[in-house]
Length: 371
Image (cartoon, rainbow, N blue to C red; front, side, top):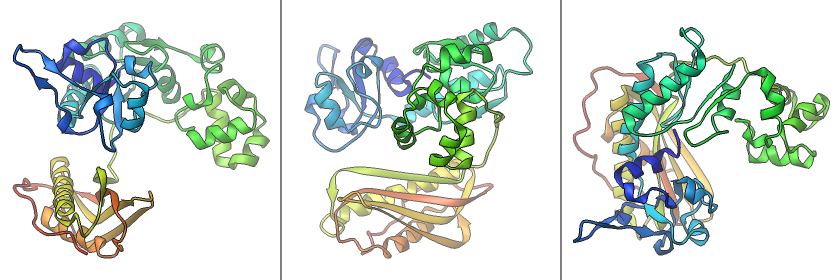
């Protein structure tokens, strides 16, 4: 999906089309409805606090504002950009709509998150281009939103070429196009080459996918190890044998929040307790909604110096009960010295198993932050 969260917001606020819009911050930045029926929107320059941008419109990206950037840094680059709070309920709603529209055409779908899927078109009758156009139109009709599709022999190439003509793109690519269309791209365009690997490759004089394709396998193996070096070589030549996986079990379900300002375990105990309880309740709700039980409950803490600590506790029996999750997470907290201020708090359930006839969460567990 194209700039998915931002595009959903533009459905709600069509007067913002064509403007730099950033999604992030907190709900206090809701648009204000004025007496004449118009809306007043917050601007990035007015933002004070910690917060990270979730996404941005293409107009904001042209100004250098991208997802994962600190809101305060984004404000320096685009102070007049509109700032909207995230609304995950709305994004999940449109995610379900677009995936249902595609499944009505083909059930062979691998879900890759809220805004991205892989589709296996191999066994569908008809020419590929009309079929891809049909999928694009189905998504548009169901959501009012545009998507970009890359059609190629495998997942690796499709991922790359789905980004080549955004927004509202449709790119067809086969093996004969790799040298002309893929090799000139930077190595980071390959999904699986992160910042650190790209930095190491750059130090070896490897900047483009063409450079990587022509690199000596022995050189890659010396610096990256045998397994990753082999994958790098294959990826640069457009080789990817992974099938479209239509179903897989999640490994964990978690919720976390980064605070607007650092909180102290004792001085801000009441606030932290409320946040902690809410995270446990939301994890329990996610488990119940998805039909899972968790046996291992864990916490994640990030302190003011960016040090991150995790603790886990395995229960005798799996659960989706918010009170039990709250109690287990509290036991984990007791194993961490809470002397520094906190900037992030998270709760996680793992070692998942399928549950049936799970009751709905009807209230939050009670309790204070353990010290």
